[in-house]
Amino acid sequence: MLEVRDRTGGMRMGEGKETKSPESYKRKLFEELQPGRPGDPRKTIAQVAPEMNDSVRYTLVYETKDYATKALIAMIELEKRFELVKLKNFWKRNMDAGGATAGYPGINVTYKGPDGVLFEVQFHTPEGVIAKSLETPNYESRRSNRAAQTVVENDPSLTP
Image (cartoon, rainbow, N blue to C red):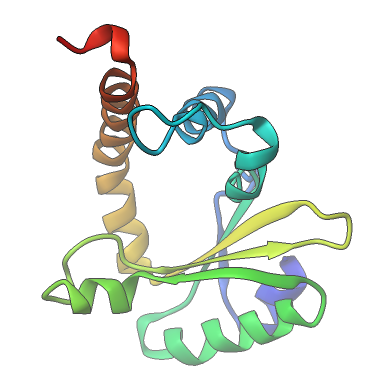
């Protein structure tokens, strides 16, 4: 990641925090294991493993004026060594939802290493890093609430 950062002139954020905390990992795993609809069986670890894409994640930050070009160059560099699995462009998603400032500001890309391990690279602007840090507590609360709500909705013993 340092090589890509250096080639593209980006900044690395979150060094030393590349892995999801055990609490966050367990919460996400718990949520992913829940059935999609009432009556569906719980999912297995094998089924959700492909969804656990951000247990290892890196953040690259580019100045706003260079963001689009440098993030694209970084993605091209990464694709030379890793398989691109999924790209989520929240800038586009936010524009489709009504405005450039609505929601999470960034691009998240999941790659698969030669060993089969998934990891995520988040591309941000300096302003996006600030917005993300302000939103993180709300995001974590929503995730926890959504997981609990899913369990209650899908457990027949908890419905009247």
